[in-house]
Image (tube, rainbow, N blue to C red; front, side, top):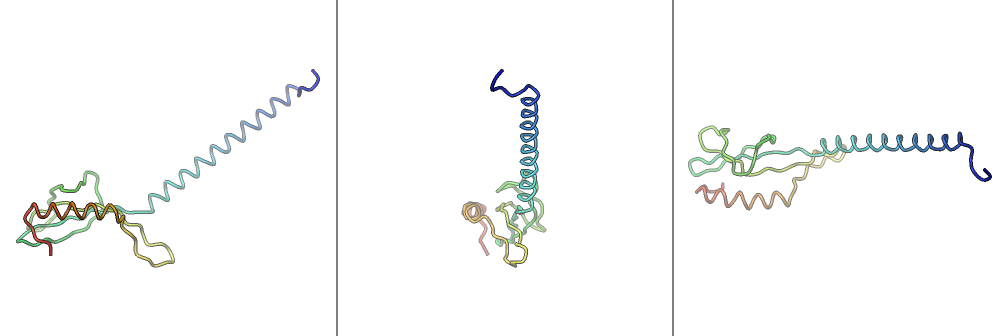
Length: 127
């Protein structure tokens, strides 16, 4: 048995490797959880409702709710028909910088074009 480590030493090395692997997995799981929490705090999603009445369009902004989609009719307007025309996210203000949150510009532009076409098909004028 020249050149081979004793059986107890092989077991010790395997135990150390196993402990290192478990430690790395737990550390990675903790980092993933922290990243998910950070992403949840990072942005807020909003829904814009446009109320169409008397040839005028008024806008209301509220937090996104499950089931919202662009074009969905809603009963949140006082005296007129309302439709969801925009769903977007805003990043919260960064601490210490005082900058306003940015909207996701590409999605906003695409949805704005869709909203404009939708409102024109409803016969409302933009004000």
